[in-house]
Image 1 (cartoon, rainbow, N blue to C red):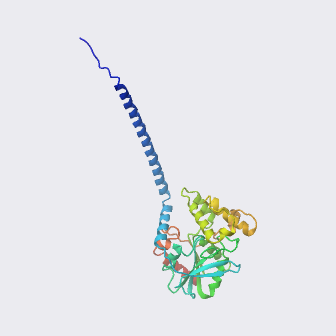
Image 2 (cartoon, rainbow, N blue to C red):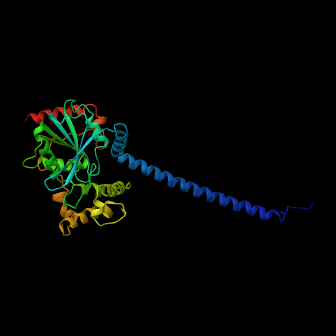
Length: 330
């Protein structure tokens, strides 16, 4: 008897090694793919968790954007330019249907970088809060609403010189006057409300900050840097309002952040106006702090985001009107 065995051919050995190498490459590729998928899954889960934790903020942002699109109306205004006792030119917008003499006048103050074209102005102006026989007007500080600053002045967001001048200008034409400030426009409204002679009969602020610095510092700490958007918008508003020509500063908002542009620009403008350098924190108490010294009546609305309450809440405008009428009777 003999024995025999099969010897693999020489050509079969490289083929076997290539099969092993291709398997290793396939396993390595599969491992990398699984790893990338895990990384994507972990990132997606982290985004979901963060979104859930900040769901109220995202809900408010969505409601703000929707109300800006759905409640916006391009209204026609009669523009009137006035000059305060200090020589500062400011502008007010009167709707053509608003009587210049009535029982009640609503003075609406938009945000610090806004005008009467903002959605929340038309949202309240066309709401049931203002009766047809009542008047309403949009007030703009110098540099807003069609005016340009002629000189650098030491005024911040809480300035009341032009607003008080306008209220005295119309005081005898109306039995009662109510001032409604939106966003940063609530800062001068609340400052005037705490003066010895507030002139108006009632003051209201809607979604207004007390100290704007804390707002932008908080926005700068988010992964969604909202302060970048406001820095660019701030730059455009300073150009439109004439500030850019009066304050020698950066030609372009870079870096476009609160610390990189908005804050140093504000400090620089006060340095030119007063002749001495002070930090923003040193200027804050007098010019950028709208905090109240007396306890106000606060309403919390569940919907509306930033200044969209009159669109999302059906009875908010009616409740506001009832409060105003009671306040004006006192």
